[in-house]
Image 1 (tube, rainbow, N blue to C red):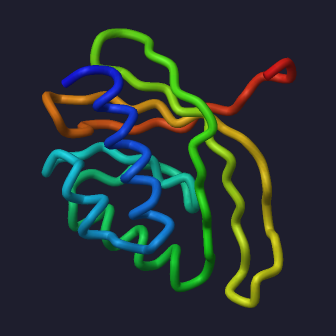
Image 2: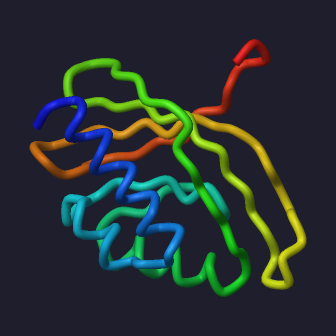
Length: 122
């Protein structure tokens, strides 16, 4: 899979996430996906645990995540600078900022995702 194909796939995945299409997002993740639990802390592994995490999160928050730019580290690793806004269920903004999402691919599927804070000059 080319870098351009990975960027397109991730752009479509963010769109699915923002629509709350869990199955659409899980479809691009390996069955043993290793995913950060950025809301509560720690990590979740596997489709069932990621589904449970997002279901609980979306019952309390309305996050929107938009990719801003893409870069590449090691082969199969894509770094996405994102703008993320978290709102409560009434629409009040709880947080609004930029972070990095780092995706590791295993073939055509994502096997791991990490969140990295941006430095002060970013």
